[in-house]
Image (cartoon, rainbow, N blue to C red; front, side):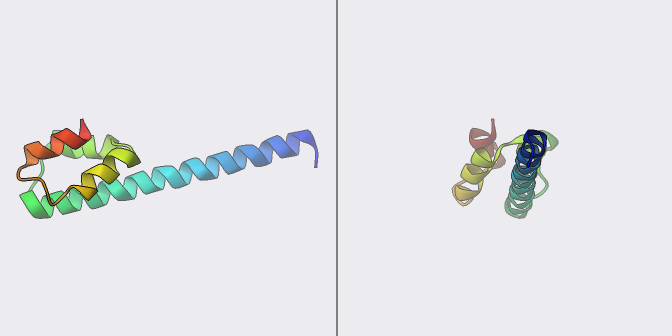
Length: 80
């Protein structure tokens, strides 16, 4: 395998891993939005947008604490 082929393969693997991470974050954001909508009703647009922009760590915290929120405002602590 040539050096160019190795670089191409490494680039492909990096792209695959990045795609998996993006897919994971999108799935977590969708689950969080669904769960919060079930709990509080229609979410304000700014909160929904913040959820969709959040990384997997923030989304994990958001979801692991979902039953502790008493209001939509409590959600801001985990996604700002």
